[in-house]
View (spheres, rainbow, N blue to C red):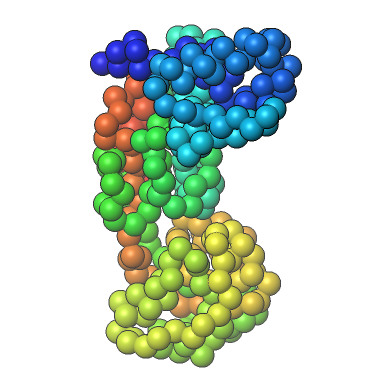
Length: 296
């Protein structure tokens, strides 16, 4: 249900407010929006009267935001951005829809991207836009329709489609080891590379193989891709998901440091806002992704 009209300011007033907040003066905002300074001032006054709150503090010709104005402009920018995006989508794809998807870099590049052609062929009416996010965020307040999540069902305010558990394998440059290690505990004698978002990755891998020990500290990376490159150049052993490591293993850039694999510390999910209605594009993508994951 749409909010009562008295709570819905005009687009013109919101654009004027956003421009003044960003540029710091009614004159600059008027120039940008091709309006007069007095028109900008009227829009601001109308907006403040409608909300019954002061948004702008006037100090001579300089306009600054009040605390309420600072909080409000953040929401206004998000809403204007989503409205513009929806308008572009309606114009460029009038018979279909757009799916804005937040992805994890490694999963998106090495598992999802190779499969997206199949979705595009089956659903030409849907445009999928991809953006990288490394950690959970306030998806209900964002322009994203869904996201790829790794870990557990601990992202508040979303629904989940389980995709697959992550299986990991330790890999290194071919000249770092003559043969894969048979004893997992021997891994403690090698330089180990760590992922920032998986600080207990090595501890859990070792524990799953019966080795209760704290792994040595080493280089820390924020993404699998840079950690893999460090391993390729002989800087240590990387613990990589099998779907990420396989291409490097096939072309000989990396070799197995151990012939043992274990389940990692979590699974991959598709998540989407619980409080937001599902559009046709999301429904099509979710059903397709469930089929892909079933064959993973």
